Image (cartoon, rainbow, N blue to C red):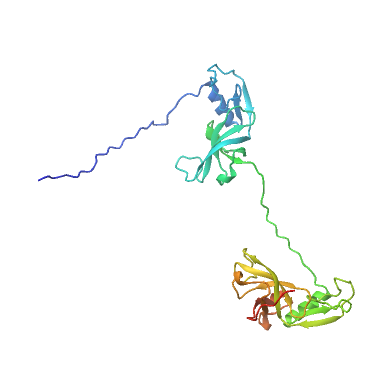
Length: 299
């Protein structure tokens, strides 16, 4: 008879630690680079190497002891996006490790770039260093780099008042009563709605007011996918509606029907708010809803 034994694996935990931190000398070249960082400057050396090196990586020759200030801005030549930062990373949000060619330098520096999204960090992107307030002479004195400011978002909220003229007040007074008022031109024999004091075609004064029904036909429309406090839902439809008896259409919302079912020629009727809630405003008409009639033929 065969038997088998299952045993837990033997695991020993080891820790390699340097109490007080691993310390090494920087040498005159890197020491100078870090000292300049502490002062808020970035320098290179030789042809121009950033960070500076004691020996040229191509020829192996000692680098001349001549330091040149570079940057502070630079250009991204390549990058790798970090979606999930880990402990010890310079940022606690998604960022990129990038090769940055600082202005005046011949080599690239690797550092973190806070771009917000990888799409904002294409090769050629210009970036600037973000310095720490307290610096100690370390590469982390540069907290990270950030793309150049190429656009700003400014809150805009103009507030103004418009005083209604006589014609508009006449029209809105009709809306408050639940009536669409138009004006008939005696010369052109056309009915315009909203009511206006002069004919837009011949310029003659309009004296005759016409009460129009609250039914009409959709002549053209647009489906909107952005929220609007006046709309019944999203997506919603705004349409030009030719009221029965009018010669020009007026714009209004369409409700009571799915947006994809709205069509040219659809017959609609105004849906009014309760009379007790009406004011001198087009808000008295919530929107137009289908009447259920056959579609009208548009000429």
